[in-house]
Image 1: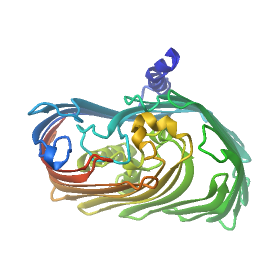
Image 2: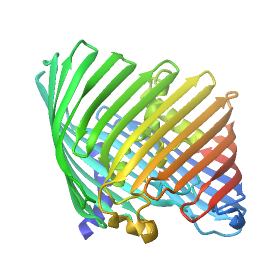
Image 3: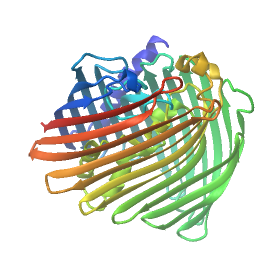
Image 4: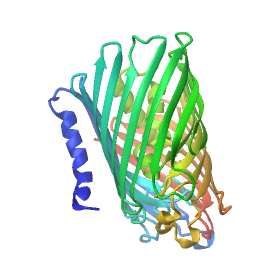
Length: 512
């Protein structure tokens, strides 16, 4: 890439933060730094086959920061953590000396009811392949690479009374990795939509357009473009019939077949109450018949989320805008019945994720590195539960990815012998996280994760399982202790054998 492109990822988050904070000094800020040390004994430090397993003590020195800021015109949420590892017998292959991750999400109103900006930045380890270790260990790099993203989206919103509303958005984003075979990329996109306002209470309508241009170090220049129109008809105040027609065009090195064509869809949108919504449609795009489903429900003690989608995507798009179930959003809805203050609720969500070891997005093992355009069919569901002393989060998913663009762009990631492994991949998995508050200071926590990936092209199948159980204790106002046992097993990839690991760890955390 050019020098200009290399500088943009460093400058964009800073510029976005400056825009969000401009003119807003009076805000509700919550900042929570933490320092912790974890000592782990594992009988298979780098998760090798039994004959090559090595036991070690691993020391993890961890510093973290959680930040929330909110005012009338902006909102910022950020988390970051850094880990330094030390090994009793020295580092082993596929283990890291250090790791870090951060996530920043902000939105601001620059001009009242007219100009807005959304911005985000992140860095975290991500799976290289769907076939291999998918565990939660921070010091394991056997199937991991560091992925960084940033995104800045200014948008213009204009209302024309009750007749219509216009939205125009320009976006700039970047995805990069320390894995050279995964192409660093820079994207530009523009979108516009015009939708009917409240005056159209029986028949609603909308027009939309989107174009995206990508520059990728491996795949080169690609683009996508879509235009559509939709209409909604109200049978009553809670049930709408929906219809949509459009045209899609993709410009990439295809393996064969069309890359553009007309689309249509029809369905309904039903909202029987403020706590329940059901949206469904069936249609057709140039790549075949498609469908979509979204079901949401919230009760006093539970939240439910079920969705299905069939769409064209890329790994970089999933890293930027993950369409898996967002953990924080799910827990926010779950805690909203008991914690009305949004800032306090956000802090409670962060604490719960840290306590149970939940990933940022449920079903996070769905995404893996690829430089190709993919058709993905994904069915997933989640349930959050809280009552009395118990809290639980359950997630299930099933997905199927079919590669659409040239196989050559992934040859560096997989090697020539495995070049067809990612052509067609079917994945399914389940995650359960549970915590029980024994008293005001002590909680029991447990987690179980299962994933299975199948290459429909080669027939290779890989499964991974992980069980965790632990006890957390509030030792003082600013001091926490935890102990955890873990058992994991699974495949390491084609021709690499299976692994098993047993581990126990103790953690001491100080809230500064």
